[in-house]
Length: 385
Ligand SMILES: Cc1cc2nc3c(=O)[nH]c(=O)nc-3n(C[C@H](O)[C@H](O)[C@H](O)COP(=O)(O)OP(=O)(O)OC[C@H]3O[C@@H](n4cnc5c(N)ncnc54)[C@H](O)[C@@H]3O)c2cc1C
Image (cartoon, rainbow, N blue to C red; front, side):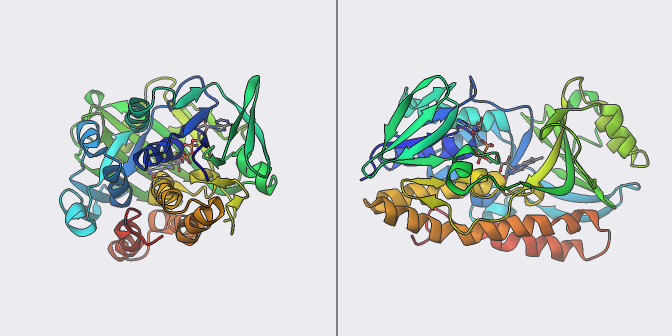
């Protein structure tokens, strides 16, 4: 039996899992190390495969209220702004893949998820619980936290992100792979920008070894950007760092004036620099009463906007598996069998997608179409488990 479920981490993966489990009649408890649920200011693209899942757990109207449905996706030359490719998103995505495509502020998505979870169970999320390790007994599992009493449950789901303690305790401390890419992220008030930048879609500017994607969030009041630069080494302490906009502008010296204006209007203390890491795909996510989900199981590069999407799909399949099978082993096996090949394929595809953005040769339309067809069409709510 597995009626008592502990989730470690209240990120997008952990909260979606909690809500999906509540919808199946479980009462999961989420333990988060931070004092609040939240995120540094950044946007996120929700592709139709993840929106299908969020609809399934009752969040469609909240998304319509808080997210933006972009008109189109446009690719431009980095210096001339010439359009290389333009593809419609609004309506087309729903007609082709069965769900809309959204842009949303990450903090808004986390707030939608946590409100829904707390609406179902006011005690479901416990903050300030820094998980350290678990001891798997034959008939239960005990989870330990810094300065807190241990918590006993039937199963533990590790949703604690790329630096997962749960994963380390299950499978050892293998090095994350630096992918040779650094991401700069910022959020700029739209009113400070010229109209040409405030497009109602996502715009990707492509150069050699660099690219930038920007799109509106929060009613188009802000433009979120992610600027990716290929760099041989990541020499900073830690994985993310508050960064100087002047350093970023140096990287984009010869780029179009719209790009430079966007970057230079980043408010103080609102530009972050991330070393992009992933991990070698695992062939097993489960040990006894514990399994992994989201970035803890399969961190990936952001180039296909599929990190959260995979966490959200995992959550739906895991909740369905736990509902279908009362035996923990069978439920975890079913979850893993359905998810592991797809998630690991996306880890590799996301690495490969670097060349779509940062190599000026090749048919962009064909590359983009090939990249998204299989990904957006997937439906975690109906896949056979
Ligand atoms: C530049 C960039 C852009 C991206 N853009 C997109 C996009 O457009 N679309 C998309 O789908 N994905 C995108 N991603 C990927 C996405 O951000 C991640 O895949 C997603 O956040 C993973 O969710 P998660 O819940 O698995 O992990 P996380 O979001 O990392 O959440 C983990 C949670 O666990 C908590 N935690 C960690 N350790 C402990 C502990 N010991 N005890 C208790 N709690 C703990 C953390 O505080 C956190 O709240 C992007 C990533 C980057 C870097």
